[in-house]
Image 1 (tube, one colour):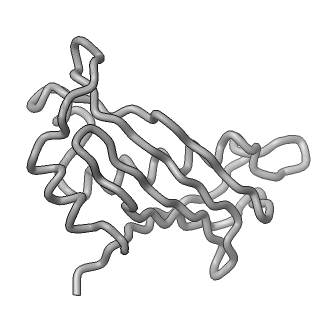
Image 2 (cartoon, helix red, strand yellow):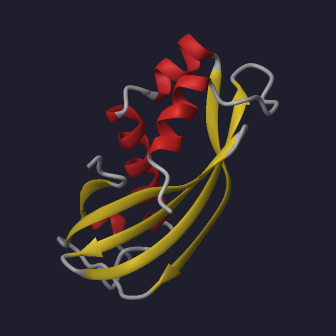
Length: 138
């Protein structure tokens, strides 16, 4: 059976933390962004390819996060991403940041598809849409 999630490892560096050596709250969004980007790359869709070959960019339209436990300096984390919705011009991810089996952060992100030159909403290219729909969690 095909895996419907993507795990991306993250190590917490000093630059990710505040003065208490705890991950600064906004950096969880950076970790989630990297995981989504790397998942798309693993599916064959780098940001550069989207822009240069298909003339589209994906942008975050909405993001929310729930902070459950702090991540700390030198922690080894995993960002687990799942696709929860895929429409004509947008798609949604549910993401969890884990330290082992502990859930530290839970986030939901809605991304839109824009024309790379006009920045107006456009339909997602069919090959990407088809791949994302196959990965939907139910």
